Image (cartoon, rainbow, N blue to C red; front, side):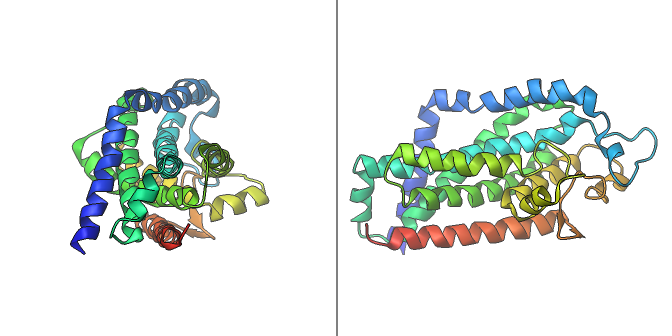
Length: 283
């Protein structure tokens, strides 16, 4: 047991050191947030207007949810998503250069390797997601210590679930090229069909179904609910986010933060279980 815990810590520490020493990776992770916030967010905020006013329920006069406020949690989720999934590429690199083979023959449980990789990738993704808050004032988002204390556990949960998916995919890949192709094939549809960048109103039935079964939808909804709850919005808005098209419903039932947590946690546990099983198989 102690050997497995030591292995998990060592693998986690290695992932952290690799990220910290790779400054271009840290700087490059801010590219997409800048593009989406300054180009996409600022460019469309004027035409989108008050997002809460375009849904089935109308807000009281003077109560508005700006498009940049709406999109900012989605951008945080996108950064978490890309960083978490990309963490799986370290598994492929280690396999290509023979490092993974040396680790696999060590007298430790292979599940500890998968868990350590997932834990390290989730920590890295959480840190990269936190960096996005540098641009929070541009989006009109008020930041505070209570906000971060409430948000960090949710960010880590989201990152852990998505990193587990990335590690699971990478566990069977043999080349970085193959992983990147599969990564793009999966991640871009998941993030763009998660409600991160558009309100969930008046969707075609086929798209609405995909959004509902997409685990990223509930991860983004979780982050959005937490962030907006610290923005001095009236309770009337926060209690009816789904009716304004600003929040998720689970097949007709309005969700709460804890409902999102349960769904994301369940998805994460399933991915961790599959990843550990695949790592336990002999190559």
